[in-house]
Length: 333
Image 1 (tube, rainbow, N blue to C red):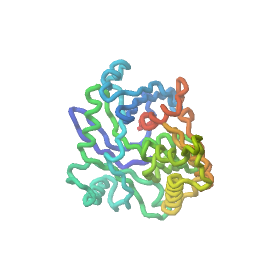
Image 2 (image 1 turned 135 degrees about the vertical axis):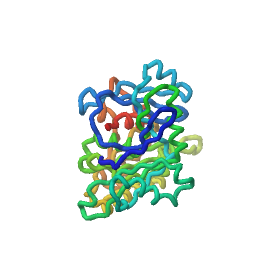
Image 3 (image 1 turned 60 degrees about the vertical axis):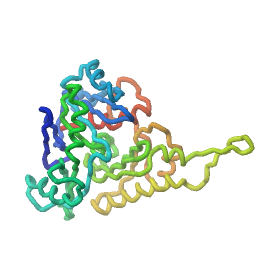
Image 4 (image 1 turned 90 degrees about the vertical axis):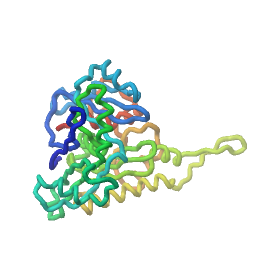
């Protein structure tokens, strides 16, 4: 992905780039860290060969146990990418200001200032562009990523005591792209859906570029609860599986269809035919079947072993909890 620049802040001697840089092979490996419940997940990816990422560490960590785990695994000075939580930042698609590349961030800062509920000088911001639109005769578009500097400093404060070399603060949309771009379906366009407990994230990528990201209000808890229910009738359980799709599943399918339609019309891309569902903490009965029947897509579950080499089989629940940490560790500069 071509990127316009970097925004850095200094905190207790640590310089952190809130940015999305051009990719190059990193042979030393990278540690990804993301929230999971009340704690964190750590995942380290080592690149044995330029195109062969290997998972060499996967660890669930209590919120107060980060220092001890880092000491046990000798992670001091380890390069780290931490994923911000949804709600701690904003991601907005904008028409690109007609300015030079080195003036882009400043122009975007003024463009978003009226949407902030804090002072403009408190905003940490970066931008990345959607490539190829100008060449298609379309209006150039960029994504602006911005957060209050206190949210960025909060990320830094979590890891400074552990002594890791925090290098990147990333966002779920782009770490999800890191996984999508390693799948064969991405070559012709891929929709990837990741469901958390009470929300979801849909990303649409094409040849390693994130074109569209949409947050969903429903997560696996609502979908699993709506897909199958039972009541007792004369002391015997009876399934209440209606032939009609449930409201929650219908809503998710509708949001996916709207996103696909927007992607085609706004970016001038061919229709996406493949949807992958990220590993789930809790199974959602009928999810694949309902989306396949409603939208006519090729739908399947994703196994992260398709993307990385793993030393041993990781069950679906752990894959789900580690999804963003692994995506962060897959980042290539």
